[in-house]
Figure 1: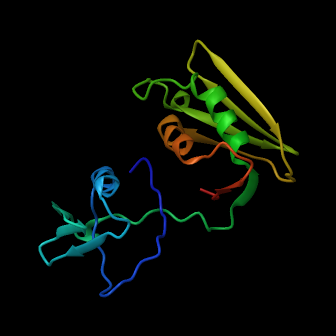
Figure 2: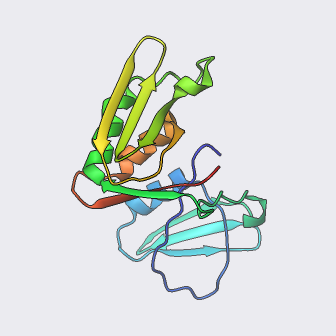
Length: 173
């Protein structure tokens, strides 16, 4: 429960339902499919069949009722927008100084995001190194929070190298 990602995909749904599968396994299976159209079916025993063309996989899922709800960030938090390449550059230039996950000082295992007046600052420390990067942005509120290094590694994979906007929403919690 360190990281949660929610996304939506257009689909022709014949019978609505919910099932939980390993994201890594599901992603690897979909990448190996020969067609663009993928069919997903599950039965009452949580067996999931994934088909595309002549390729067919059957994996075991778990009931959606047993899966914890992801936290919502729509609780009156703060939103800011920067170009994707700027956010990616900021993370890359500071993540090397994040401490290992097993460090006895948990605060060092993440990067501090400081939203100052018209500026975003990222700071990472591991007890030996300090990395800091500032970027101008439109902001009238101040706030600071720590994002785990593991989460930032995943965010790096999602961000592009272009000027498209990237919105970050920070919940009050």
